[in-house]
Amino acid sequence: MLLRVDGEHATVGRPYVICSCAMSLDGRIDDCSDARLILSGPADLDRVDEVRAGCDAILIGAATVRRDNPRLAVRAEHRRAARVAAGLPPTPVKVVLSGGGSLDPRSRLFGADPVETLVYRRAGSGPVPDGPVPDGPVPGGRVTVVDLPGRPLVDVAAVLADLDRRGVRRLLVEGGTSVHTAFLTAGLVDELHLAVAPFFVGEGDAPTFVGPGAFPQDVHSPLRLAEVRQLDDVVLLRYLLPTST
Image (cartoon, rainbow, N blue to C red; front, side, top):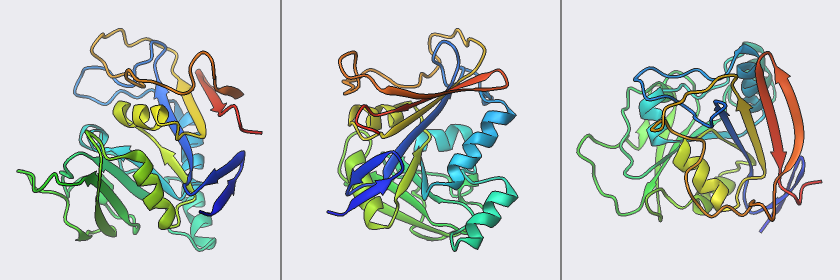
């Protein structure tokens, strides 16, 4: 396998993985209402946009697509222009993890950005009642559906290996709960960005940053705090693996 050197330390046969999440003071990433809860302020949203611009792909779960309907793109025109000037598409490749592969083709994810979207679904899931995303052209680019093993999500190590074969060197993982949990419990996160909003959600059923699991970075092997940054009233905590230099 090839050795990738990407910033803080080397990764072997897979992209360098940044896990990014905004949460409330009580660890919630949304509330229980139908409206999307905004946890980041303008300064932090601009920081995330800069991180996106420096990555080759952005990954989320299908539940996040259905609930938040994100565009999942670099927004600032100067960053889009800089990517194009460097011979890159204006925004990174979009990646979705899905159990059955069912996504609404009208989602903003498949909008005007001329980039490929990769939908990884569980092998053997078969057709779904409301129809999977078509494997082919969409208004913004091309959608490729990839079947991989795993349950209930596809195997994240297999996803990273496939992305590596496709030339993805730096991957930004933006959630939600099950996706963050899968990557962190598998020990496949190199860098963790947590933006903490200055308020509580206070709802017991509201989704959390991660769910239960066996995390390699436990009390005996903690992450290393690399940066604390104030962005208006939001606090960014940036962690690296203990092996990072």
